Image 1: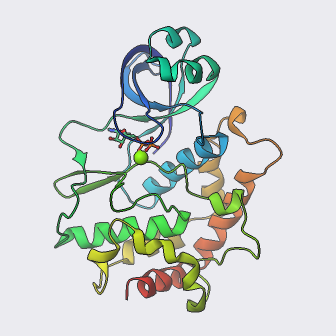
Image 2: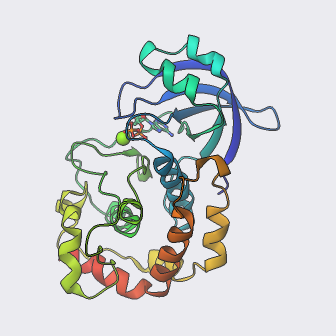
Length: 267
Ligand SMILES: Nc1ncnc2c1ncn2[C@@H]1O[C@H](COP(=O)(O)OP(=O)(O)O)[C@@H](O)[C@H]1O
Ligand SMILES: [Mg+2]
């Protein structure tokens, strides 16, 4: 999957859910085709780092076989500040240059209903979502905040601005890596709050396809994903993209050990 480059032509509405209250626009791609796209402007704790994490995570998720809305890089003319709700006007006015967006999924998808039982084919899909969140260290797909859209047997992951935070705001003493020995498992205690943790515990999902895709990820592939990040998003004085490339390349080399950690956390 590639990111699409869009320019907003019409404001539709503000989303009523989510921490950042994204805005829905109609926007045109470079061939003049219209798309509905949800744009997350930089404001509050959604910073340059959040934009970078969103874009790379979406491209990586797709590469690893998960369903994800097409990520977009969206120009929103400052004049839209007059049309959006007052609470978002400043963000739009200041949001010159590209913003992160996600193309609206097809109708029929709904936010994952709390407590849906996970059976059959969904076990493997849910386990891939769990593994992906451990890989990018995303603590934000929780019970009560699913950040997951679903339609029959398809699980679509959204909202990855908190991924890779451990690279941006390193912990004193350093965080463990999820392919290290099991005694580092306590570094990933937040995974107990994961949307699928309770349902997946004790299950034996097939993570073979995820393992194969992760193991097959070459450094050049990862660079190819990261190359989509617009220059304007690079956080000042921080080589976040370089760190993400090195982190994911090491994860790919240690893919079997990584899957062992996923299994250990789900024991
Ligand atoms: N591509 C998309 N298609 C459909 N709905 C979406 C899409 N992206 C986001 N949403 C909706 O917008 C809400 C907020 O988006 P999200 O990325 O979770 O932002 P936040 O960081 O504010 O929580 C989501 O809960 C979901 O309902
Ligand atoms: Mg959200």
